[in-house]
Amino acid sequence: MQPKPIALKILDVVSIILLAVSTYLALFFAPTELVMGQVQRVFYFHIGTAWVGLLGFIIAALSGIVYLITKDMRWDRFEVAAVEVSTMFFFLTIVLGSIWARPAWNTWWTWDPRLTTAAVTELIYIAYFMLRQGIDDPEKRARFGAVYTLLGGVSAPITFMVIRLFRTIHPVIIGAATKGQEKMSMTGDMKIAFFFALFAFTVIFIDLIWHRIRLGGLEEKVEQLKLKVSM
Amino acid sequence: MFIETTPDTSSYMIAGFAVTFITMGIYVVSLYLRNRNLKQDIETIESMQNEKPKSKIKRLRL
Image (spheres, each protein chain N blue to C red):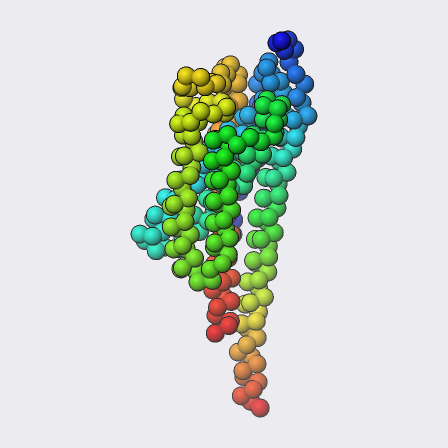
């Protein structure tokens, strides 16, 4: 196993600093929203985690396509890393949304189109790991995984677009709201905290994916050694 | 009737940030532990591989 690259060590430190600054901006720099109060501050992390969550699912689908074309196992490792990190972040998105919904909508959960598609997306990617666990042959596992992420990747744009296609109580953050939809407006300081959170979570996402890819390399090595010993 | 004052939703905010840091912390720890266990596995398997040829030589001598 190669020693940890210096670039990764630097990225670890940068990620911690960015997370700390983003937390500061969300908690102290951004003004308190008048209608919802302090709970609105979780919105910055809610959007940050949702962004990297959906981005990772798209990246995994693209990695799946590249794997199917090249049959290079490095793309399989990349795909697994993207799915795992994104599943963790998207879980946070759902939980943070639920925490925000309790005081805002007076309920922890409702079967709104956005919430439903988000929950389905999360379940699709939890099932991805169950699928991989059930296949012993590495190549077959990679092939099935690639096809699965390709099909599962469709759920990411659907989750993003659903508030624009159906009648929903979920507020629109990015882009224009259609008639009858709630559009979340932000002050200048709120926008700074918002865009910084997007940037911070993107860097953290890259850092965690890099770590997970290295872990995938170790997993592959152990698998090969076990095969060698058993022969 | 309209709400005139901003509601106190601090407890929800604290819960949100706590969940975020705990979940991310658990994930980072899981990465570390899996990494450590895999390295131990590699060491164990490699030592087993090194022992194998020695035992074969012993058997041949007998």
